[in-house]
Image 1 (cartoon, rainbow, N blue to C red):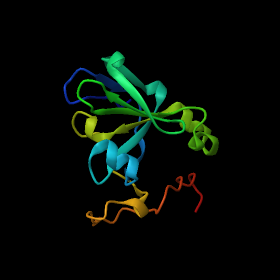
Image 2 (cartoon, helix red, strand yellow):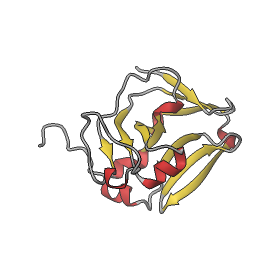
Image 3 (cartoon, rainbow, N blue to C red):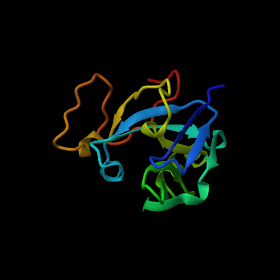
Image 4 (cartoon, rainbow, N blue to C red):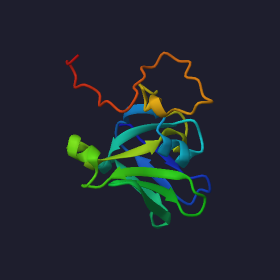
Length: 151
């Protein structure tokens, strides 16, 4: 089983992931740009049961950036820690499994997580000053990955 740790900039919040990272992407939506102060956020999802705080959970403050979407950040240094959906989120209505997953910014992880972005999402709202130069598939909005074996 894969185990990787991560945390915030000031070190007050630390967490461990003890399961596979999946659905890795570069998210170019305006909310991720604002949260990260960058052209995009590179993120992955992990089953919530495989995400555990080692310290500082009480320092994580959640902000509801859109109905049912909660972005958790360190209240000391502002680093993004974890994103999660509430049951009222549109994403959960479309993909119920999203309620049992958390999103992690790959840059908060210690070392190489061993995964790479599989897609660029929300490129219709990408920063105008940033040019995508790789061959990773691009999607104007978010299109859920097709289940294995479907085309």
